[in-house]
Image 1: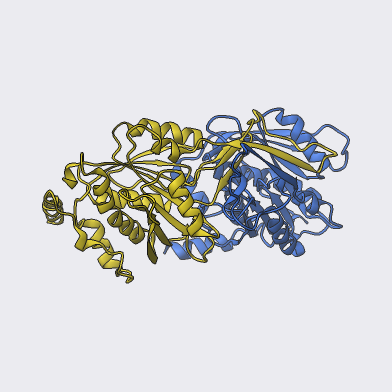
Image 2: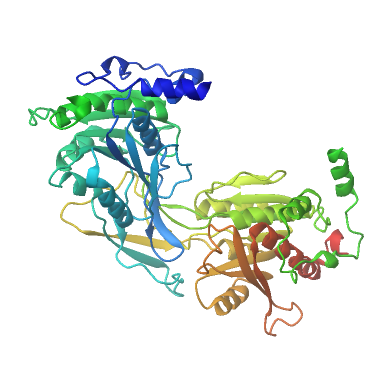
Length: 282
Length: 282
């Protein structure tokens, strides 16, 4: 009976205190698994390193209304955030997935909260942060919203040939998370079209992130909307924060596969950060 | 054999010259069909009033790039345009469906052309118009695009708290169609949040439309993204264009159902317009 087999496999995989499944870490393995191996890996997690942890993940774009029919948005499909939610769940975490407007089905055993704008996403993040252990800000939150949203559909003004939209800055959701008194372990994303390393390192420091995942969204076949992605991970040594950031390159692969590699790479960093309070790292 | 039955039904339904299937017009019937009746109506068209006609339909939103990751768009889902494409096909038409970015599957036996921006949509419409008999502009084309599209992702400027986007007018696709030397029979749409009748009548005259379909996108449960819609159709009498427009109200119903009612209502108007050249109306 496959259900019994699955339950047996799941119940037997909580790691013993003091151990971390480092041997399961695939980050130096650039081979994509075969489809069969991939499905099996989804069905039966290799470890339960995040058992008991609450992981909050934002995904997708936000939409900022111009009027009742028009909006500003971006090309984020939500696939990377949804894949991270599955990867964290497969490591035993309780996952809250806060998503902007996307066309993806809700993965099993994940609590999904749908939002539209950056302000709504911030409210949902605030509500989820009460008992959050790990926050992964994967959403492509709009940096700006309209200074004023028109109540009715804007009409073209005859005689004029242009229009100026006045935008104001949105709240910085990830900075709001890391600037709390007891911030969770926080992972950020940098989607860039050039100077990836410089922008990512700047964001890592400025936003007080524990780990940043940088990707080049201008690379053909990767990034926004695509099924594959590549990334470079950057983090500082918490004991020597003035040292240069450590970087780790993850070659192009399916987003599910990349998500698993990111979660696996994150685990020892999380335990370094959390060693005083998390039973999974004690 | 269901295939044989379908083929027999299809081949036997070209209307005789001089007849129009007015008895099939459902616009005074406010009852939604049951799901079974609905499927049957899709599988076996009631008539082939548009056999031999080329119908070009635009659908969905357009997206206007701000930079490589951000854009302006609107809430059009494409459902109404796709439903119209199916309704025209089911009346025997050859259909070209020019669609902005939507998440809908391509209906069978329809030629689909995918575009992103208004300028791309205009180019696709121009290419399809060579032998177009009926043009239905159902797309929610962005009125404006960015005056300049940034080559690289815009970064927040430190110290500033706002941003102004300078927009310029997009080409008016439907006016470009009706202002040709021999325009096709042209149906436009007006999605409004207030003063529906005034805006629709103004657009009917200004854009030289043969028929306009007006809907109130602020009505809850109807319009953009919803599965149901209602509409008011307006048209002028070609022989007495200074008379007030005739209006015809279609109560709320499934978009597929509304699409069929719009095509059915359009048929005698099309034949009035086309009587000199279309064999289906001779």
